[in-house]
Image (cartoon, rainbow, N blue to C red; front, side, top):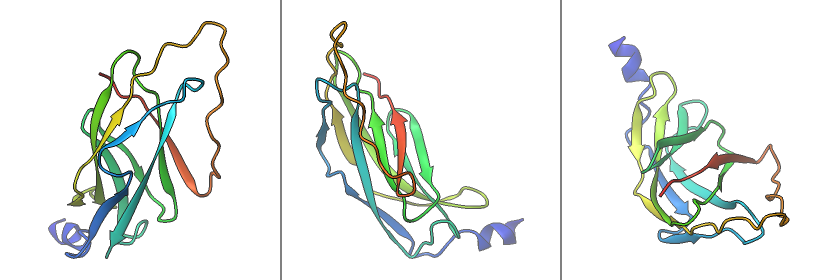
Length: 146
């Protein structure tokens, strides 16, 4: 088992960097929407998504959010803001090996503040969330707490 584990640890130069959203981003839902989308973009070096493992998004409030198993997919968090208070979350990305799930590299954290959502107006209409091509974007629900 020790030999197998050593063979699944990727390369020493493997790294991931969150390039979007920018550190200090404020995500605020439009008053006519119940959610706000936050797109995550990463740069990956010396690591083959799928063959060697996946990249995962980790949040300071809940831990692992989700993992992306295909290099071409972008990750969009469909955030449901908390009502009545702002949430401040630090996100980082991790490279994880396929076989044992070892974390090979952690990116620097990116801070995102989620503005509070105002309670919906009874009987008021809400806009549907944006649609993305399913073959290009992984849309993942996320509801931070205060």
